[in-house]
Length: 285
Image 1: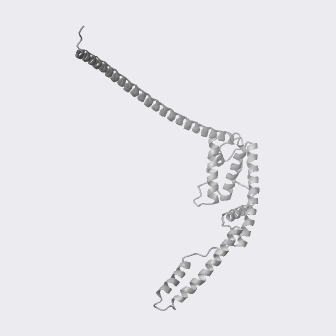
Image 2: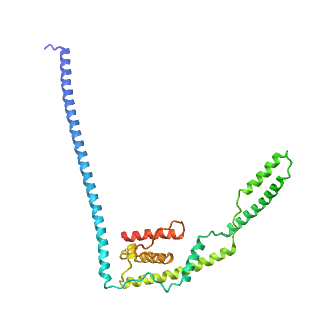
Image 3: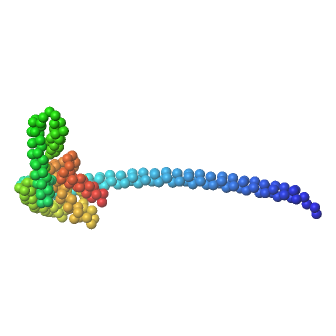
């Protein structure tokens, strides 16, 4: 049979065109289905995110409710116990002498002062001797300024520069061996006083715990109603320092254990910050 090759080729091209059309249609359908699937997943993700947000809000609300309930229970417990339980006294300390408090403060002041090591003292004395030598030369240079001839401009500038260089400097502070010795003694006496005072305070706190006495409101507000499980010794250490801080700095607030945060940097501010952080940790435990 005689077949026209051109017509046969045209038939193949037509079939390929139909197949391509079919493939394009299937691809369009696949893309449409994928777009619908992606939109569905996006909507599901948004819905899940909204549910998680609502759940987180609910958890936060429940946590706040539990916290309020805990505070109400603590307050109720205090009222119930107040009528039948002895109160712990952490305000009056007749056994702690005023001299001990003074020695603690003197020790803190000694620690805050600048101290020299033997090498620093040696270097400082050398710097002072060098300063004094240059100061003497500068004084002589300044005195000579009034005697220089009018045409000695370069010499005048040299002497003026020499004077100005030393006048803009400050003489180093001389190390005081007597002050160093006094500070060493004050530190030692302060450490001993604070050790003995902490022992007295801790003994009274331990007695209050052992006899289940009612703590002052400011104490429970700071430390919580009891020591966290497994951390009794740490809790007692911080509680002792809280009471000592009130005693040293005359804090009398019935609600706030530590009072306002100190503004100036120093030992008191450092201690206040440490105790604030530790107390917050115990309340969360």
